[in-house]
Amino acid sequence: MDSVKVTKTRLFEMKIKGEKITMLTAYDYLMASQLDECGIDLILVGDSVGNVMLGYENTIPVTMEEMIHHCKAVSRGVERAMVICDMPFMSYQVSLEEALRNAGRLLKEAGAEAVKIEGGAEFFDTVKRLVETGIPVMGHLGLTPQSVYQFGGYGVRGKDEEQASRMLEDARALEKAGAFSIVLEKVPAVLAKRITGEVNIPIIGIGAGIDCDGQVLVTQDMLGLYDKFVPKFSKRYAEIGKEMKDCYRKYIEEVKNKKFPGKEHSY
Ligand code: KIV
Image (cartoon, rainbow, N blue to C red):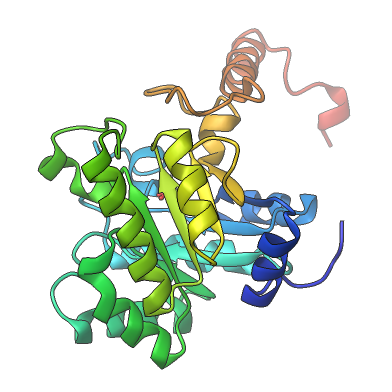
């Protein structure tokens, strides 16, 4: 693993060379420092923090203060990876000024190096303005969880030709506005391949097949730590949640039965 700091330039270089880009989510210092130590390229402080860490039903209630709190912890643990922070619902939709002020807070107060927003051509002016101000922006197309009520669920997006060509246009618009990368969530693999081939910025897929420039997962999902909902696209690399519960049960049993602490833990 190279120890060189991941930058926008490096990501473009990786796309051109066909080197896959890796991204995982983190919401705290410990996990972020582990991911960084292991060589992840991008760390996303996703608004999925709402589901995974804060117990909300979806990402709608997540606030700027919550994103700042978690992003601060993450950025304290990271040296090499690029830290990208999600802009929560209604922090960038109301006006350009609010988008700018809130994105600025994520960089100034929370230590993010870039922000991610959900949506395409409709946010052309917002993305352009943020980028012109010096704030790198990652787009997010396909399944955009902040629009769950509008779409009425979390189904695959871009299944018919009309939706597919709109998504391609959105990707082109984001690129033109100056976004440095796009997350494509839950779209058919053939469409993701087409978009990846037709835009010049790195495309990071989640449930979007093998041909994207990189891949992202929610870390708690891939660790088998969060089992309230397990998406088909998320490979479980371990069953850490089960192991943790085994530890809690063992500790409870040992304390109840006076097996812990032993002499070696006592003064
Ligand atoms: O919030 C999040 O974790 C995300 C990823 C699923 C890409 O946006």
